[in-house]
Length: 186
Ligand SMILES: C[S@@+](CC[C@H](N)C(=O)[O-])C[C@H]1O[C@@H](n2cnc3c(N)ncnc32)[C@H](O)[C@@H]1O
Image (cartoon, rainbow, N blue to C red; front, side, top):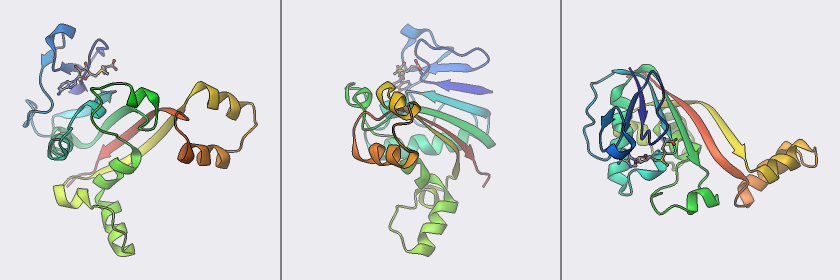
């Protein structure tokens, strides 16, 4: 099974398209903030969440419950494809139903390998993988630049380092973040 959670109007062929609202005519209506989800353990080869995760879990416990459900429902090695607006973009700030930022830094907390590494180094990052008994590795991260910054970069007027600095310093440099994560088997 492949799941497209929070499908909205963009249903994907070959996926079980799920949404809270039946007005968008999903294959299955489900509220992803209600746990447990109506899917069996290790039943999904792939889960797609496109512009959805930032809408879920205003309460931290709810968000952490959703991460645990993603881990439970994915098969070992199964992939989680996340697309979110960059937390420092007008796309993120301009929607009242966006309730939390989602970033590679946040998702990296759900890796037991990272948690153990940070413990050895004495870093204070919250070891959420170990606390929740979930384990996700980020396989790939792609930052989709806003057109103005993409043009600057493509014109060769700035280096990769300068672009990285701009991403740290300014708003509206990155429009979207794409992440691919894999469930690490227990
Ligand atoms: C910004 S839209 C994105 C829709 C679609 N994935 C796309 O790429 O066009 C967010 C979707 O998440 C759904 N959603 C928000 N909260 C939800 C929840 N608690 N349970 C299930 N779906 C939810 C909304 O109904 C909406 O269809």
